[in-house]
Amino acid sequence: MTESVPVRCPACRREHLYAAPSFPCVCGAPVAPPLDRRGTATAVTHRSWAEDWITLRCGSCGRLDEWPHPELGCPCGTVLRIAVTERADVTEGTEVPEVTEVTEARKGAVPRAAAAPETTAARPKPRRPFQPVTIRTARDAVTAAAVYLRWLGYQDIRRADQRPPTGIGIAARGLVAQVDPTVRPASLRDVECLWLTAMTESADCAYFSLAGYATDARTRADALGVPLFVLDLTGTPQPVNSPADELDGTGA
Image (cartoon, rainbow, N blue to C red):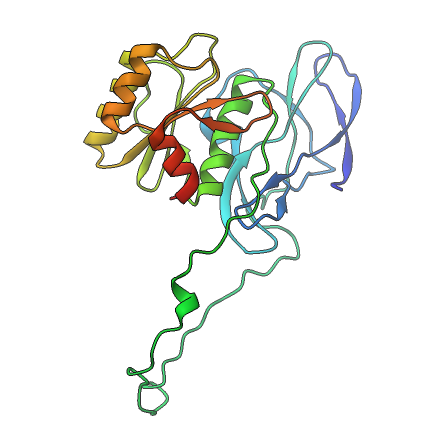
């Protein structure tokens, strides 16, 4: 359970009790932003990636990732951005594990180069069950896609450098993705533009849509090898073609 803090709306002066949601890290542990009890909530008047996302460290594995900045909708219509502690990128009381490698040769011993590798070392580590993020807004759809990509094993998830014609572009190391939170099925042009962007950046790509895909868009995606996913309202991406099935099964 995360701690609840009092939050006052600067517009109507109504007071709320707010508890920050937690999100699943790749390792499976919950990650929640540290709230600033002495901070003041501010009204959201415009959107930017730098203000909408914060960097948090998982208290279990020490991994750094970007997560949504906590927000609260007031009944008066104002969206409140909740204050977090100044060092929001470091979970209080958490030590990041250091890995120090000292070889046998450095200690003066003969390296054991002839030792046979263990058979179990080649086996992929099983992934923990995916924990979805419920979708209520367009921002939730982006969060759900980002959480899913982290679960697949992608790192350094951020806003894409190039803005797509529709939807919102996000990127990770070796991947560009497009999230379409509209009620219009993604078109052939949408899929082709994403694929061309990925080609120019020498990266893979994936498409996430709330409303599905036009028939010609699915056909073209199959030919280009573009994974297509449909986001249901529970926040669970559902593969809708073979490239998406393969990505969901193997991960990054």
